[in-house]
Picture 1 (tube, helix red, strand yellow):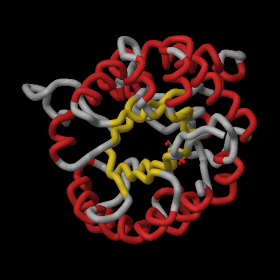
Picture 2 (tube, protein in one colour):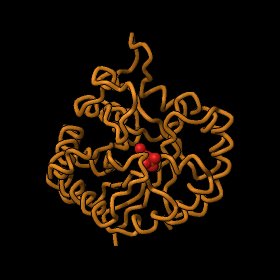
Picture 3 (tube, protein in one colour):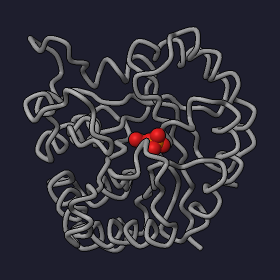
Picture 4 (spheres, rainbow, N blue to C red):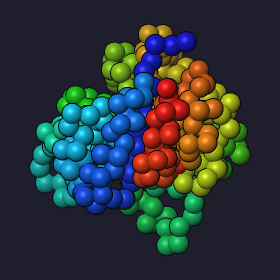
Length: 267
Ligand code: PGA
């Protein structure tokens, strides 16, 4: 049994207005007060102030879904880490597969040229991880293989490579303080969950990779979430596994009753 505190994060993606965000935070506050898990919600940038205000005095922390690595300047459309910290954000998702242009479900019009606009790479993930840490934000670093990569037997190699390049240049202490989310791309938003045993195995690969790069203490401390179609009915099975320290929840984080049930499953 590890001493790691589980962390359940809701990735709201491109959903919710400010008033909806406020309402949802209020609805999950009682379950967040009751669970053993650290509870984080990651609304769209525009809802962050409303979510932070609603979360004040509760056990809920507010994260962002992305950030830029520069402090300020001529970077149209970007959000700087200092702006997030100033707004009361504590966590930030970095390198989500949807930001890398890796989608589990083929979408009409998403040609290679359009997908390239999403633009995230292991190199930009690395810049963002360093920038987040500099501002005291906890990175939730995402990794995971596509269906083609899994079928080709490349899952472990893909995930380890993303971790190695994405976390390059950290201290052991910084690596141990991270949250890493293992999210198989084919299981995101598809209703397709990775079997709990396999999810646990790959989360173990993440931990072993952190151990190889940053030592045993970092591997023991780093929290590894599973993400991809986590729902109330599979949460307990996933969260009871030794290498899974929480969940990054998409669709089921948009409805208080579902998210609350997942928070309960983490206890
Ligand atoms: P999902 O999304 O729970 O809707 O599959 C998870 C994620 O993308 O973080």
